[in-house]
Image (cartoon, rainbow, N blue to C red; front, side, top):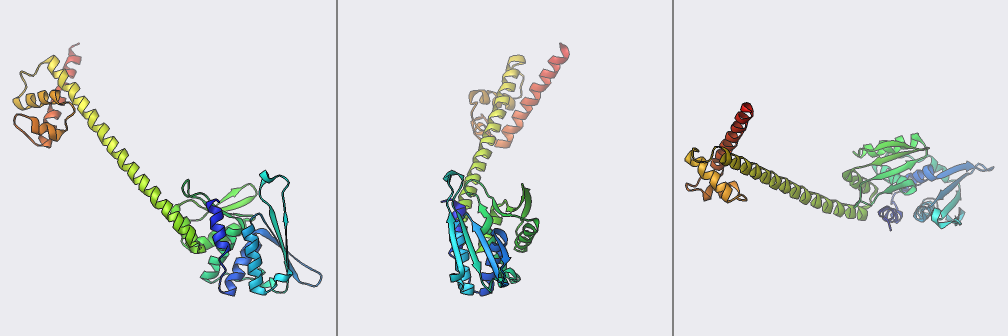
Amino acid sequence: MSFSSKVKEELAEQIPVARHCMLAELAAITAICGRTETDEAGEKIVHIHTENAAVARKYFTLLEKTFNIGSEVSAYTSVRSNPEKGSNIYYLLAQGEGLQAVLNASVQAVCCKRAYLRGAFLAAGSISDPSKSYHFEIVCNTEEMADYLQGLMIGFDMEAKIVRRKKNYVVYLKDGAGIVDMLNVMEAYVALMELENVRILKEMRNSVNRKVNCETANINKTVSAAVKQMEDIVFIRDTIGFEHLPEGLQDVALTRLAYPEATLKELGTLLKTPVGKSGVNHRLRKLSDMAEKIRDNQGGTT
């Protein structure tokens, strides 16, 4: 089962305590995957169609608990002839006087906003596998609905954005922290903990990789510096020789040639008169400057 399906299964089992929250969740599902009409007697009829059995089950349960009109809800399944094209389609038809309350549901309280977002996600949302990427989205048929959902999400301090995708409008989140906040808002706490565990593991891996890359870069830098030092020292030896070098420079040059892989600190301890790391570095710089001057002079005389 995909991570997205796990979240929907968790949310489908969650029934709000307050009636106004049930209405808010019903309103969201109706707005996104339903259509309404009025019969000859003036009663509202709601048609819901979805490819997710959890959504159909949740909608039926909410209607039954909110209005006690379960007996007036009919449902049937359309089995696609080619299973590869997708899952089955579930249809619900409900009618009753109470349905007008769904269409006029007030989404003002924080709890109702949570319920509305939960219903919207159940109806048309998805979340990518967090071990691969962070992406949360709700697909809307109209720009008005997308703007409304974006406003609700921004109200919970989430950086929700909208993008046009063919005929639809998609409200989405791309950062892991924002998706964690969204799961918290929808009260999908089991999924939230699973995502957080994945985030922690990914951050640990990234931290280790950064340290390894940093250490590798430092090693490469040290090796490159040592190679350059060896080249300069050999160049000085082969051009002017070490005889005329000051004793300290001659000592560090000979020691570097003898111990090409030694660190600056190790070189300092190997000298006839030991010096610290900064002292060794200072002498090697002098040798490097000397080698450059010799090269410059040679270039000017050719």
